[in-house]
Amino acid sequence: MTLSRIRGDWAPIIPKLVESPAPVHDPAFDFTCVTNRNLILDICAVNASKPVNFDLARALVHELNVRVHEGLARFFPNPAEFMHILATTNAVVSGSWLLAFLLSPESWQPKDLDVFVPRGPPGQVIEHYLQLMGYVCTRSFDGISAMYIGDENAMQRVSYVNTWTNDALGVSVDIAISVTDFAVDVIRGFHSTIVMNMLSASHIIIMFPDLTLRNVGYAVPSMTPAVRAKYTDRGFDLVSSNDHLDGPCGLACPSLVRSAFHPKTTVIAPIDSRFLTLRPAVTPLAKYWSAPVSCVNPKCINNVFVKMGGKPVED
Ligand SMILES: [Zn+2]
Image (cartoon, rainbow, N blue to C red; front, top):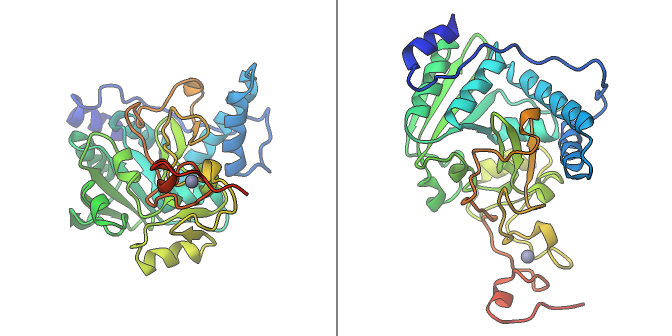
């Protein structure tokens, strides 16, 4: 009934919305002991191997897909339906819920979901869907995004944030609307690299995998104490510079230019086996990012001094 109502109201915008059951665990594989973090890394490793073991790749991706649906079931009775909405709108899930999913699904379970949406009709589509799912808009921030983003420039990337609450489920969903056509433009402006991760309809993207998967993040100096405490209390190490590194930065360099097309700078794991060899639509070719702090490591070639003509310090 829900889908038919959406089709009726938003037929011009959602032409391909289809009914789809939630996926179930494949009985042929037992990944019970594999953490979400390792499952994602295994998918990347299998995908990068030659020749690719497609049976194993599909099994790993399917397991990740099942876990994503299980995680989202707290917010939506039919997570597959919500994933269709993400696909239709090019919106992404990010923030604490995704970080918890990536790193510690047992010990930390946020009750709020952050969804980042391109400007224009996609926001209306998602908020209409939330209404149909029993959510009520309980808070509205017009152009105020300090709760997500820690510096003045980045705050300009969000046009508004609405909080939708579902008392029956005991959860809430924040809808943040980008000022551009891409949700990634908001996420690469976050207060720290620890939350620069995305779940799209087709992929999980970790924008700073070397740091995030070790519970380390580069943070803007202006990060508020409350936000900083939220993450440090959960075991994350937030640093505002890389001067602690003893040696070249390598893939941990904050000034390293990253994109979906720069190998090893970003983890991109498909959650749908149809996308095993395809790039996610939410990170187009033209989008690049680096950390919100600059490299000050004298042993790194990305150091500002080195870039101006100096030589990196050698041991
Ligand atoms: Zn560096």
